[in-house]
Amino acid sequence: MTHALDPERLVHAVALAEDLSLRELDRLSGNAESIASRVVAGSSVRIELATARGWAATLGASLDWLSGLGGQQPDAEHVRQAVLESRRRYAAEHPPRGRRGAGKRVLSLLTKNRQNGRSGSGSA
Image 1 (cartoon, one colour):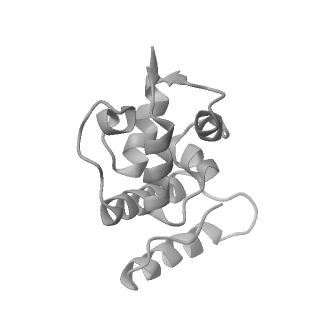
Image 2: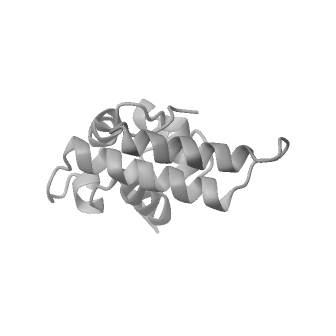
């Protein structure tokens, strides 16, 4: 099943996160990279429902709002918290290849940033 999304709302929600790239949005949502950038560029208007749901969950936004069908616009703090939780979940589920202990360092950095009131470690 495909779903139409409002590219302007997707861009707005990503901007609310302040430090999230479209590439990282796709990665955190479990999607192939570049899907979000194709939607924003207008080269891909219809996407799989699972893709849209992944973006909505990562951004803390409702699927209805992202689709332009109504729903409440998410506030910046809610989006940043949702992205931070997605980053934590991704770090825990995808241990880094290569350097030993890198995953622990990433989780530690995310915890420190949360304690300092920042939203994350930056975009990938």
